[in-house]
Image 1 (cartoon, rainbow, N blue to C red):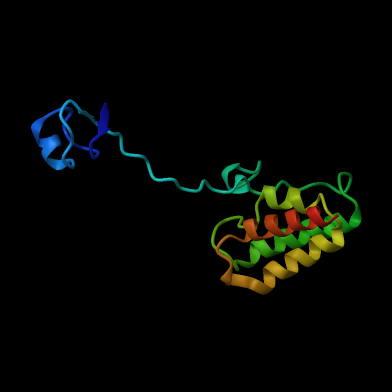
Image 2: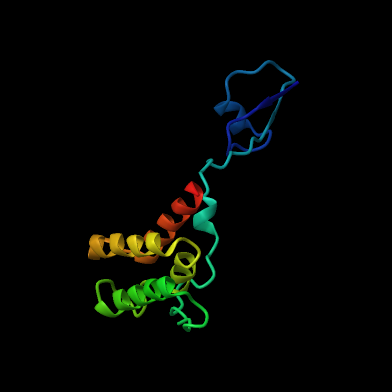
Length: 139
């Protein structure tokens, strides 16, 4: 027969026997391994880095964008220049790319929402990316 001793006790020594409950003769004590605590891993959306995160927004030309998407780009650039948030480009390339994938009118609304939140937002780009993701789920 084999009995498990508490984790950290010596293998088969008298001290292990003393720490464990009284065992019948011939029972051997083995060392147990403590289990690691179980923790939740971050959400997959937070684990993967979105391309363009932290990079300056790349300006698209009139040939690349329709008129209303040029308005989205201009609004984003204006918000970056206003100094509402810390950093050289708080609304980054990832943010602009995401906004250009949804309806231009909704993109402008999202930028208006970010502007209304103002300095309360510690990460305005993440705020915009989350709203764009919600928008894409509802389509």
